[in-house]
Length: 403
Image (cartoon, rainbow, N blue to C red; front, side, top):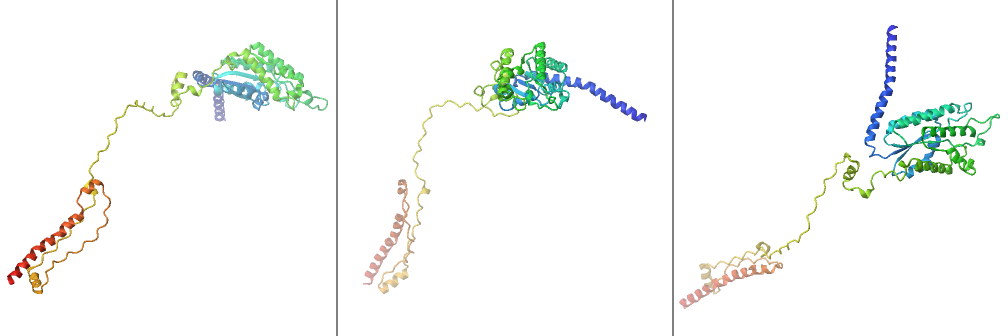
């Protein structure tokens, strides 16, 4: 038993220490994040954070006041929606810590706070668990403003809840249904305006902006009698822009520079040169850029190209000459005697007839100078006739001797 008690005591001590140290660790991490973000805030777009209940959440629907703000500042600031349907100021205190720890305070240039529609819920009806007393409602708003200012955020706007339509709330057993009445909503709207005045921050009186509509119950509010129509959204947007342009001129559309330079101002091939010069320090993109291309040399007058000299055609180009035909051998002495006895002249052995020569291909003019095979063959064929002449003389001499 004593061992179990000791273990339990040690566990409780460890949990207590963790709970005590957690806020300090979170604060140190937040300060480190804020310092790092402040050092790099020139590189990132400013942020407008919209905090609230469903009036803020639905502002990002088509035509909503939040989406119109984002459209206007699309090259100037990031508009972040931190509206959550059903939230009251008691829950909203934790929303501030969430987005400040996520983004850091250095980038946040505007925060809007729009609560009260759920805080004003009837405590005894359905949804009464969302009810926050009027005094706590004001205290929670004051705590939010002080927390934002402690992080260096100066541009804060309080937005009141809109009115509601009582007849949209069905009566049950002679009593009003659980949603807040018009009288309740008016009190919370006035309390929000009072807190803004005491804390020295501007405000948007959404309650009275909607009441200025003719037939505001159907023109500015939707069928549930609580949320805004397109016309109601546009009226709230106009009210917020009036406050920004007159009370927060440092973040007006004309005061904030465009985020990132125009593409015509960026060196398209080596953009790092442009961005590094803008932000004053080197940005490492992790991409290896190709080396700059060498500058081409100026064009100069080129020397005229030499004309190729007419070279004599190679001998290999000419058709090879055919080998000359072999001369017929002279007749032997025995053959001569036999011929003389028979009275017929002795004939030399006939050489084999050469193969018919193919038609020679047309050769260049220079090739015509080479001796043709026909001339060589004619010279060789003349040799046998030259050899026969002395044999005929010998025959005549022999005949004369015999005679």
